[in-house]
Length: 398
Image 1 (cartoon, rainbow, N blue to C red):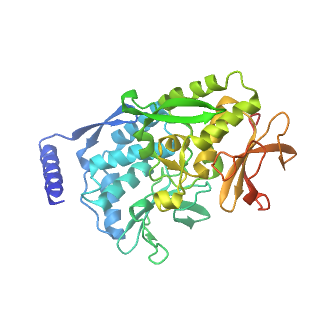
Image 2: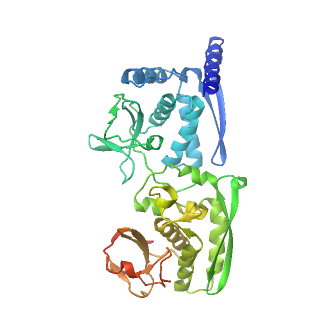
């Protein structure tokens, strides 16, 4: 830590000396999601680390706001547009840029200040708040997000973006007080929807071997997976089911799996093909409950499920949904029980004990291992008398 502080202090001194002799810019460049982000930082953006007080934060903002921040903001937004980054991925770009301005390990308050400033100046309604020993970073979001703290201002909900840095904190016992700073251009809501993943560099992928047996025949897959995807979703919160189910695969992973699944199901009837995908999702991966695996509830995206050594019912339902949607594009519903989730698929003719939802019949397809070897249209015995709710309906024609 002392070594890092010395390095950062030297950097600040060099920047101040450079300013005195007319050197106003510091070029930055780093790899980000398959491309390279380039920009320059004006020396006016390097401010002293703020104390955990409203006055100190406001003073740091005034310094930043009077500096030449337009180049870095324009570069960030241009890169966002070029790669078509959703807000969550854009925030990852801002995190990495803030690390260039002030490393997180050197001074957390200044690092958080930069993240907030860059996001707010990008047009998002972001806020800072202070508790006794914490600086909390919020952003306006009007989606159904669970498992992270929020506060309300004028009937607007602000979700905590840096709660993962305080995993054991109880913000109800030590409630943060908002810092009153008005950023005129900070008006947009922030979305957690991820509808497109970047084209990561092919060399950043590794192969994982998967296999399962269907109708006494063994099927083998060499799926290409990137740890970049794991990093993207490391601190991703619990989003609503529509957002969760529609997280896609990255290009390389898609190309290594979906064409092969299409080839393997070619010539099968629709029912048999869906049965094949159901059993692939059920038996190609080891099962483990999230509490045992992660110590908490954590929903994995389809690509994370392919990557993970173990997964549970949420993860498999999301992967199964994605596979059926890509290969057959059939109507589906997600059925949520108190301790389980499964999927219903609409066929031309219902199979087994179908469930009725909004005038349509859906056949239960269980993608998670059960004590019984459940065929399509069969609900696990332990769930037959348990009430469920439909938490997502997919209609390809809507």
